[in-house]
Picture (spheres, helix red, strand yellow):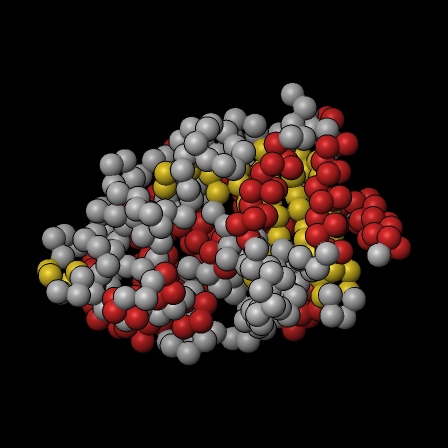
Amino acid sequence: MKRLAVAVVLVLTLLTIGRAAGAGDLPTAKPEQVGLSSERLARITQVLSADVERGQIPGAVVVVARKGRAAYVQAIGFRDKASGAPMTPDAIFRIASMTKPLVTVAALSLYEEGRLLLSDPVSKYIPAFKHLTVGVERAPAEREMTIQDLMRHTSGLTYGNRGTTEIYKMYPESSNASSLTLTMDEFIERLSKAPLLYQPGTRWEYSLSTDVLGRVVEIVSGKPLGEFLAERIYRPLKMTDTTFLVPADKRARIAQALPTHPETGAEYKLADPTVPRKFDCGGGCAVSTAGDYARFAQMLLNRGVLDGARVLAPRTVELMTSDHLGPIARGTTYYAGPGYTWGLGVAVREAKGLSPMAGSAGDYFWPGAFATYWWADPKEEMVVVSMMQSPLGRHYQQLLRALVFQAIAE
């Protein structure tokens, strides 16, 4: 085991030397040049390497950037443990719900052009959502869901895997699963026939809302969602590996999960991102690299621009990262946890305390179900991206927060 640890560290050292590839061409800096401690950042490597040895995770890629420069880029462990392939900075990961901020930004770019408004009823673009009902009693909706409701998860929609009641059973488990068997028209029809879980605008409920938003983007733009994302986000930001389908020449770079849950021993299997889906699901089907997503997060931290490419206006980013819940009930299933509210496509921290996760007031994030994670912290001028494929995502969110914040030296 000790020999394995030494080998992993040696591989990490070599990968760090060529770290620009994992930083998505963000400028690089030594940690101390941007107010970080090299010694304390090394704890990330030590802790995650130990977890690789213990069989908790196969591997990970972590990028920490501050003041616009990547100061820590590490590829740890294995890209594919079964084959013994080491992790590399350019490994491609299934990012699940980290797709949601991408789609929200695409929709906001249409908002900036006056082609949709946040107050627009969804039925303006998808007529099937005109006359929806609520609850098992099928009461009429008191108002229509809006584009803002889709972006902040107050539409009344839900995920089928978030509960066991009759209403939950009427919904697809997830778009990640349903996009393999349903067309977009079939998906929308199924949602439009199910009763809403709550009256629109009255409660936060994590849901298939962003998948519906993705369909709105397609209708307004007249283009498939993947094509529009490439036009508005991927190409301007030089996110060369972010897509819905991994092409043949990149398949060898796909990061694989361990075959079983490290705590329960149950089978753990992720969808094959080389298999075409029947629709581009905006709620959770994209793949990306740590470097690509770091560029997206840095663009948001820069208030909409990166390397001269403006994706959103500064005030739109401010709108996106503001509190959009206010008095709206958050409920016991509020995923972001205490200390956070919801903006548009991202959870937003309201206060320094309350949350068990380290952070600053005003930071924002949203994770992926397979343990991919990112956050941007305007106060600390910092972007962090962590990519792995594991069922232990929530644990590593808090762990990475703790490890990164203790490395801030000023």
